[in-house]
Length: 536
Image (cartoon, rainbow, N blue to C red):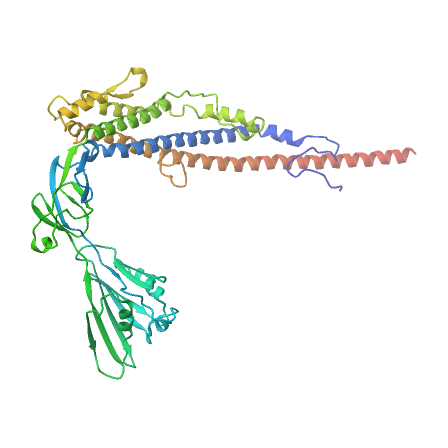
């Protein structure tokens, strides 16, 4: 039988003479199935878009909640400013719980760590710096035990190490000690990264030798960092020809900061510390301080005044920032609630996109995505809780400042959807009359910031349950919309399998029909040829 020419999955059949356009016929037969598949895909796309819209709102509101949380803190709503009469002695900042007061500070000594530097060049004239043996005459490996206060570590040193190798090993030791070597000056230096009397540098070497030399001591003495001669103690076991010699160098310790604050004496291991909510940074000693003051406990230096006051202007700026952030979030949510929904604009199918320009696709898609959160109950509830948090009075506080409006925070016209306005002059006057007005209004279990934060937190939990915190399905599989998308994916997969199976069946049947037509055509031609032969 003569072979049949087909396209494999469709085409116009011609060898049989039928001229049937199978692709068009199958496409027409598959129209209902294609419509169902397109409908499922469009529904899934709408849910994906809606999930993304929810996630964008979640991110916006979640970031705002972090801002709101800070307004429950005294440092945000009752900021303090600090002035130092001598910044060369001390600078300072204050947290919200610092008291408005003036303090007198005399600094007798700054906290310091330990800094040891070679007192002279360490390499003998003409010696190579290739390794410790060539540079210092070390003949054997040894152990270097390095101390920083009560911390210690053992570093194994090889005669083949260079001075830079030793520096690297010290820096990797992890006990707060840093070392360096300046090849140009031929000086070694070592320092603690901490300060105070707990910081100190000491060394001990352990050498096992057959020739009686103490290689660790040779190395450390060559560094010239512990004085000349250094204070050491040696111990030799003397058991055999191979002796173990331990040499310990007297540790050098740092100093604590020593100062007097309001007549009371203090010490601190660092120059930065906090006392009663004030963060001090000591920068120098007080003028007139004597060298004997620290030992005698006498503070003869000139006092520096550190004055803490409530920063009204910064408090006003802080509330203005909250109002601005609130309005930005509220405007974004209200725009989604009021956004027009174009129900006739569904997500475009691939076939529809094929016949459109890019600009047309963008315009269509913008309308298809519009209004997906229109009049959404979760969002309207969030807006309501935000507005109530700011408009309702705060119970449990006395005085005239018991609501946001009494300090100058008011709501605009109804058409503005709850937009806030701040009368900075009124707020300034309120803070001058009652410095604790903001603290009373915003902090506490029923404060404005607490109510606002709690309302937002409740809405965030609902948004998370509904749409998760991310639009990425691979990360969110538990939210309601993520599960809906998963169900659509399964339906689309099943429908695609049915579509492919049905389409394949149609093509198989048309192929069979073409074979039958061609067979009949061949028989007809054969009979016709017989008739022609007989007639002749």
